Length: 283
Image (cartoon, rainbow, N blue to C red; front, side, top):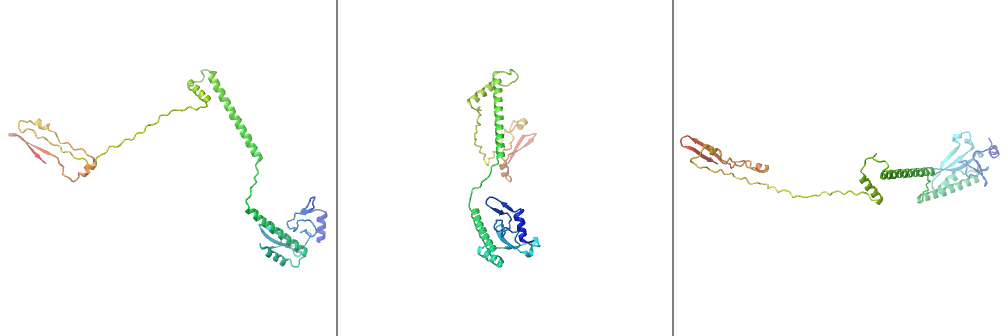
């Protein structure tokens, strides 16, 4: 189809990319190089057209030729432009060497404008600015209503409590409730004075006592056995003689005395029918 026929249909019938405002007629097609709806800038009515597009901060040169018009998926040829402005200009001159001078001039103007706004974007990102945040109006009003309802409910509970206390104080209910009247009156007086009841607690007294000192070693006492009279003693007197007791000592004393000779008095009694009783003492 001829470019003139396409432009006649777009201009006089309908175009989905056309936008008419008071200042003029603009084009919203992303491939439009100038953004103005006219014959030379329309990407649909020109079989040979070029533009520059931005993808995540990277610029690409798009070119359309009449030889690829029958292939919609390969209609546009894309060339990546370097980040350096001068090198990007060299690439444009290389690929658009035999193209119309007016179109090449528009492409270079578009590259200059896009390079400038990319520099401004970087400066704004580095600059610290205040972030404007919106407040949810409905949520704020809902929170205020809930706060009002809670405040009214708390006030109602306080009024009911004060009314019940007044009735109890006047004795309206009589003997229905059994409660200590004296304590109730004390609490009412404290509430009037805005003082809380203070409970006196007895403080526990703490005493520190010095421990008993135990001797590491205890002396072992020797028990002496006194000898009775040789003559005129009976067997009953001998049986009443004191017996040597085992000395009391700590466990360490008993362990230290292991291997030592014991100092006990052993008394042997020999009995003779003729001469009487004989004693013999052995260490």
